[in-house]
Length: 245
View 1 (cartoon, one colour):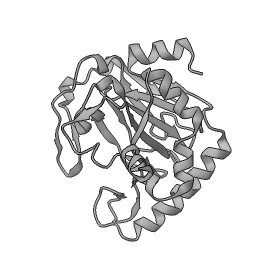
View 2 (cartoon, helix red, strand yellow; view 1 turned 135 degrees about the vertical axis):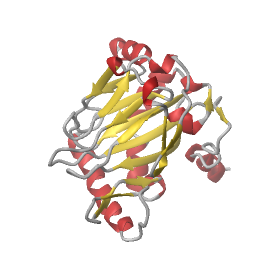
View 3 (cartoon, one colour; view 1 turned 45 degrees about the vertical axis):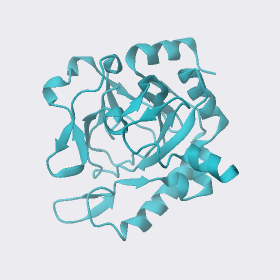
């Protein structure tokens, strides 16, 4: 069950940490599978979207797209009733899984992600019915690149986002629009979940530690959500409904 304090924090700040949603063993199993899959996919990567590149040309896994479609183990993990119940408490309606990705952030290699709002990409309405549940597959703190949020930014609408030079997979608002005085760090234990609103500004820094910082990001919507982008065209809940019909 979601506590009243957690719900109040989410509504006021636009994000909240809930620890111990999954056991450490459950998270470790998924982290190991993600590492195996990312190493296999790295053999076929050419650009910067799925891999981080060092100055001397070395590569390390950056992310896995659509892991839900790649293993029954991933599917069972993200549809865990404990996670779904927490999302239902935050949204007030039934949550539907739209899409997912796993961010790897290897030790002393994982690159930064600029400040952005998910709904700048998703273009969904109503924004209150779009939530990201970011599952920590490692203990996550400031040193290894935890999520950082601008408190209350979900109440201010989507800012204009522009492409980031040299990073075609990223776009971000002007740094002048980011009020760092309101920045908070989302420290979370392995197996915990960070939930954030689709219009909450968030970022993560480079992994400066000797530890991994793997996070399984799942994106959820309600049945009344529409979008001017293509994000809902191949949403998992639509594929599941189609398969059953």
